[in-house]
Amino acid sequence: MAFTMERWYSATKERFAVRSYKGEPSQGELEALEEQAKALSGRGVRIALGYDKHAFSPIIMGMGRVKGTGVFAAFISEGADMRSLGYLGEAFVLECTALGFGTCWLGIYNKKRVKNAASLLDGETLTCITPIGISKESYTPRPRKPLSLLTGLSDDVLRELPEWQKLALNCGRRAPSAVNAQPWKYTVEGEQLRVSSTGSNYGYGLVDLGITMLHIELGAAHGGVAGEWSFENDDAVFTPMSYNN
Image (cartoon, rainbow, N blue to C red; front, side, top):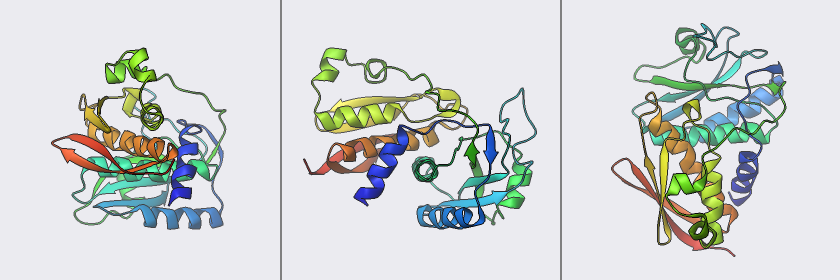
């Protein structure tokens, strides 16, 4: 598991939203991705691969435009906590990145076609999808809010935090979110890190929260700290359980 965490941590530095592709995964690669999708499904979340060249249309004012691939993964809920869906969905996205594929979280797509291609079951709700393919784009870092704004702490205070907390917060800051809004706040409470949602973000606020939760955990693991999450209303609290420095 430690190898996987480090692999995904590295992927957080390489992942970016890709909308233009020059190829699709091979059959063998699709089978490997299918295994990963099954392994990461759980907690009321199902990750299903599908294929439909028209899954990314109709386009609303250009939003959702994707070219060059028909392969996608659908993130499906059966009564799941949306934080779990974001957490597990981002784990799959980072695995795709580690395997060399481009991805892009999408909330706007052709839901009817995706439901058919993903074989949606009774009681399941389709939430988000990501295209999967060989990126035609070069890596371009997206702008992110400074940690001083996300935490309310001065740069001097941030510099004095334990190294694992700095790694965790910086990795959390890299997390993707709907319209790049970063609708969360980080609070340092002694050794604990609290993540709070600051808005619904078009209905994806808790999905976004789950995505940054995974990033926080990966950054902490890179700093030699393993921990666990607990929940207080919509807030998520990371508590370190062991140190490996």
